[in-house]
Length: 255
Length: 91
View: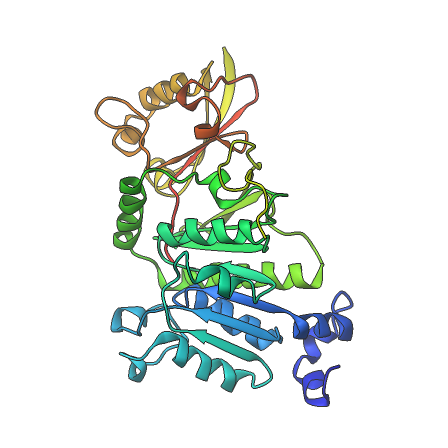
């Protein structure tokens, strides 16, 4: 049930025939986990909190630093040195006190991932390195959690959604190479830079994918990969396929 | 030989200034060779000194990664689409 305050707060969403009170209640009952509360995790968490998603988990072991502020718009200059998840929780609660925020001030690893993932309806990959992306994908597939992936570098953004065992997973499209290559890709990405606005665009798209999925409206980027080019503002949607030889999602489901 | 559409994204598109081209080739290796002949500027991006495909790019044939097909020997037929782009991983 929505309170009177909630009905007014979400009025513009409730007015949409495809959402209504019923859709808004679905959002309230839903829970999402955001891995990474940096450039992408900021707009994703802000839009999901503002839209009325009931419970949002935030995992990030990082602290706010000066070079974050050109794109991580949830943080202020005075937040430098503070743990991102706690600052994010404070800001998001101030934006929408109805939303429950669970902060996890830690880096994701194979041991803790299942314990945290299991508590949420869906998982969002907003992290900044390939090692964690492969871990998130593996855990989401293993626990059968819908996964929404956003990634950025320079002027390029990539988005794809995964329904484990039904649609292409991250590893189907970006198969994990040997350790050295994965490390090289992470280093290359960290040094290529990011235009600040790109995370706003891609983060908003990821948040929109999650909302549509929860509301069961429209179409998602399942078996699709969006490549966004900020230099000429072009959106290319590639069809991709689940691969029967993928070592991650062709495994049997383990509960 | 088959006429194949080649789509190039991100840095490759930045280098060339466009994202779509066509080659006649019977497998991925041949398609890459033709692509490099036509656009030598791509050479140091997608292949190493021994002309091996670099690990740091994604090669899809009709939406499937060639790593799960037959690598650079993956056959191409008329109308196939070869897509090449670097993964981005930042957040």
